[in-house]
Length: 498
Image 1 (cartoon, rainbow, N blue to C red):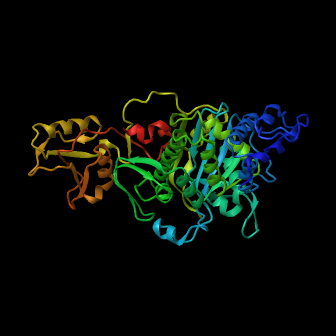
Image 2 (cartoon, rainbow, N blue to C red):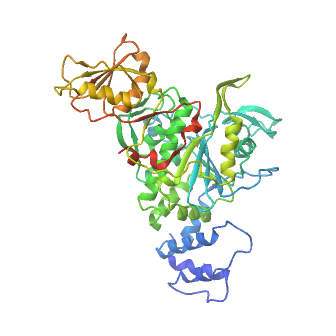
Image 3 (tube, rainbow, N blue to C red):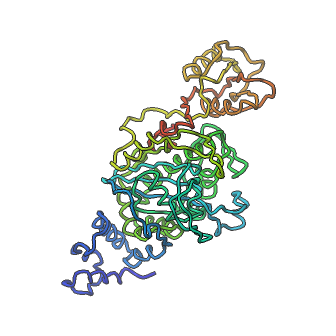
């Protein structure tokens, strides 16, 4: 690794000072004049960041070497008739199912077998406000109905005219360029930078941060990805975190439910990065930067300067500085001949959402965070009938639980009974045909045991045990109206569930 003593190469930008000034790597930064070509608006701030890194003993050569580790892709080549630039910065963050660098052990451990589709598994627009004090993340469902502009197929080299596709197929047909063009055509938001992450780079980034803490009020088990989390708080390292963000078979919401979990993961990732001192410690920041940049693909204009710019901006970030939503959906199962079932965007509401991005306006008004955040559930509590039994020797417990569930919105029977035996742990008995209702009820009773009873019917039965401490508030998230569930980062990280 080059030593800091080589950093005096930098004074070449301004020839007045002597070219060789030993052990004074920070001095040239005070006299750096504006670059001849217009660059990023925060270039001066980025230069100061380089000085901080150099003063920590890393050296300019190491900083510039980070840039050389980025795999480049020309995502904006020959693009014309693009949307007008708005305020702030828009990054198209794309997650692919690339698994070429996955080891055989990882394939088995994290269920990463099978053939990749060479398409985008995840797609988000990350908007960084012009004042660098807020991040807005908008998830774009991969099965969204889209109109691909005219292009040449990336694989067959065959020209195509405009035609309908699923949004994630744009990558397979035309790579990053067609992906960016399709997103810009649909959103009228100009994309400033393109970042592409595959399975390996995702796991490596999480591991170098030391894992990310996530919470769940209900069990999360997906046989396809191998995810198996009990209710509670978990610190997930790279492989398990990948299972979490890939899981699609946990509930009826499928991709929309998965996007909610991806948003919660990003909020937790921001909390870890901003609270762990990574952004304030040049050595840690260098290590994280190497892990990220060494395994992503980015556009030609996104380099060390831009990453340092974002790093400095995020030093003042907290989970409350971020907000998350999903593009509004008008039709959930919009059938298209030759394509299959798609998601049709709500044109009017989506237009208002993307107008807010262009105008650099927050999606949520600042609101105080008091007490536990309601847990998201997949079934409206008003549709879940519940009868409570007292499984302890505490007089009146069943009546209190019944009233608390009713106050939380559940259809309590108001006919509490006494259980035939005492139980230490609260039990939810349910018919397997109503498993979604059972999971929703379990979110209101953290730590309870789910017990399937065939033939029980739609009525769920709760046997309150000695561990009962109270009913957690829940919030029904209608998958057909995801935009109504805009959340701030502090509302979905573990501290919000305390």
